[in-house]
Image (tube, rainbow, N blue to C red; front, side, top):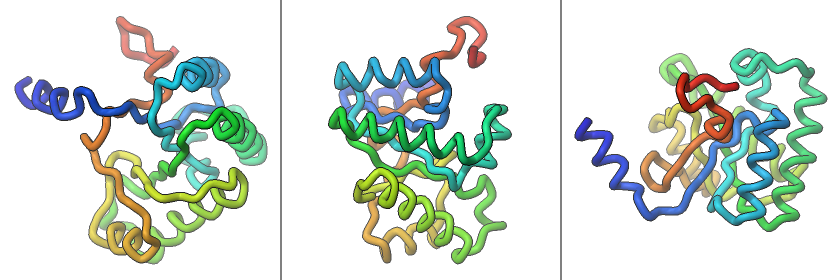
Length: 172
């Protein structure tokens, strides 16, 4: 309990950042639009099709990769047109011991290239899923001149938190 209070105080007063993972869900998208129009979010850390298989399984998506990508492009461009700050959110692996440096580099570079090619933004920072990174990850980011955002640098949440049932905690 004491650790929770301490961590809450560490980010109190810092800007809100959002890890966007369910932006393709229309209910989540409506909440994102409201928050964007009210300038409530400092940075939207966005996923790319690089993590499609993970999110298809995790959120039981009823769309193929092409539909997923089209929705991401449409919605990220809307955010960009509304002067929202967009940066990268990518999931490597929960167990980085099983993922070598080359695999990490490939996933990171594919994600960056997708954002730059489709949304035309320069990626300058990244947040990793599950806050999971290692020294190889740090080395790759150093080579690419990309900042690593770590937990508690900002207030953070996930976009799907806005559609959770307040009593059960389940995503509705």
